[in-house]
Length: 133
Image (cartoon, rainbow, N blue to C red; front, side, top):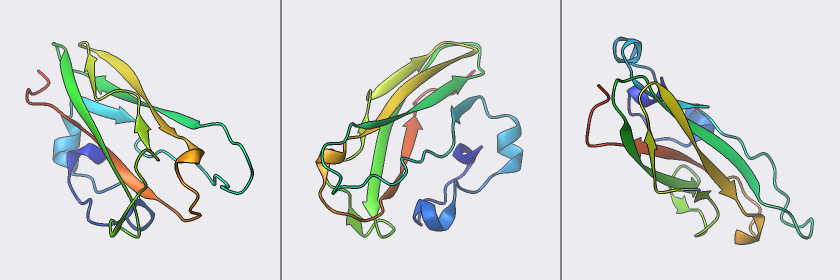
């Protein structure tokens, strides 16, 4: 339901997972689960660390397939300081979801992408030019 309205002007820490437009959410055919992803504390001084990967599943309750273009935006301090390049990596730039199905895309943080110890937050958006029918 987070996808039913805007409100991305604050960091995830301050805002949570977003606002809800109840009237639109009832009929929403495109979904994403989970609505929030936490990579936890990744200590940069602990030596070699494996990448941390989470999965975001995109759902389509419509009667035809839909392709979502995926984009992420990550920063420190509510968008005032961009995250280092490569710190957050989507497994694909787009995903096609068949009717009445879900399709997952990986979202990875490779700890070697930064040596800075500070919190980062952001969002992943999934957009399409066609409506879910």
